Amino acid sequence: MKQFRYVRVKDEDLSAVQDNIIRVLTPVLKVPLIDGVQIKVDLVSGSQRIAHNLGRVPQGFVVVDTMSAETFYRTAWDSSTMTVTATGTATFSIWVY
Image (tube, rainbow, N blue to C red):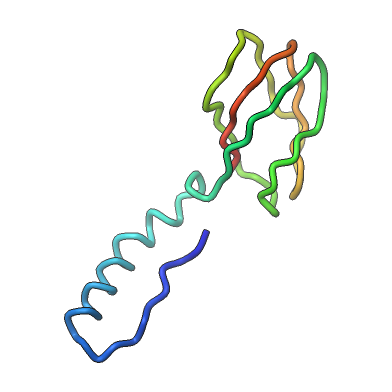
């Protein structure tokens, strides 16, 4: 997640606005859930690996949408993929963070 970039200016009012933006946004940007990606996955029954493209080990995931009554759970993950086991064939949209 990109951080707010402070621009040094001579205008005191603009500097105050930037200070306030940084003060307000910094705690929000530190929430792990914000720094994620949404992916759509088509799963079949059993275990399979899914690319998440975060470039780091995820901290969690949230099911955003499902088109089936099937379920899945994570069994492992690393900096490029997550391994899940599904109860059947289904399509899910998940937010990985």
